[in-house]
Image 1: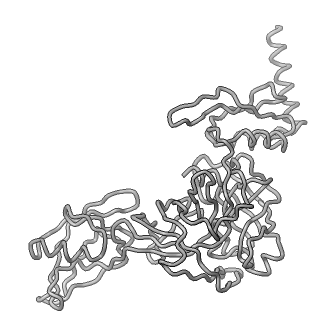
Image 2: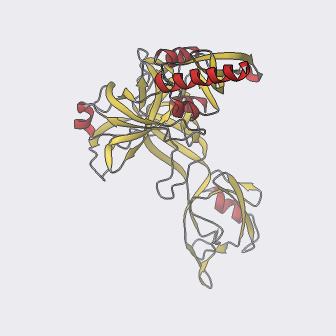
Image 3: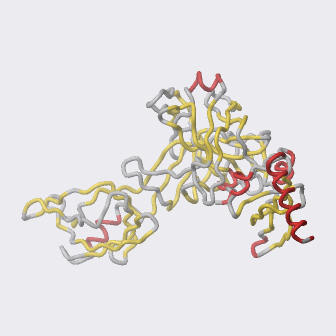
Length: 402
């Protein structure tokens, strides 16, 4: 009887805490099972009463594993006593970064050759189609037989060493998979060369915004999403690449159903600021070799956990006016996603200065840092075409973890 009474009292206490003291049950149980946090993030969660006035957050079972990775358990407790939820966390040191906000030029040499189209070969017996139905635009041609391809010049050189008009095996990168396809080249009567009947290219370039530079090692993150080929939509695998300081020459303002853009120019080989190592769904990454003119040493921040971002006032950092400035935005929706995604939260531009200048979010602003409570919490990734005053952002801790 006493045990039943104690259980009943405990349940009543929990219900009172949840009902009257504002434990946000929906938010608590939508949390991911794993997250990145720092000690200051935990303090922020408690100070801001993120999960309700009666819910306190604390850390326990701290351990250091391989690679000096520090893991722990984060507990959410009603009144700081009764456990409600526990998630695994990776403890960070509240890494400091230089904030970005300026546009950069990106130039990438692809891994292999990007297939952008197909064509016929003018053979002796008339126009001959060599293309296989198993080759798709957006594939990357990596090898012919066992010969690795680094540039478009390699294709005729390799085919010249192989028997005339005999089947060859192509190794193709399609998404994350390697696909092998057999195809028979044809001899082109005009050039005398064997050809595959493929239109290919091995470079890509574009404009995007720098998000951060890590102060400890000058590693950068930018864009918040992958660089893709504008013709095929394929994500570009990086063999090598560089970032460049670029010059903004104008702005095409955004309007409903008409995305705007930053008009910027850069010359490859001039004003090189770093190298590109990888192109991922969550941004472009590499090393900054020249900090001058792209890093403002007076603008630093810690990377905030996605658990600390909340609806309400925040700021976007951008140099669209010609000067690096903060513009006010309102975060209107957040999602505690279990897996990384470049559409983590939704925000609205509220600053009249930015609205008058750009109409909202425009192409080229992807990667613009988003700051809340003094921390870098995210980066701009996409604009709502139907309403350019709204945009998506990606969580900064996901970007920093790549």
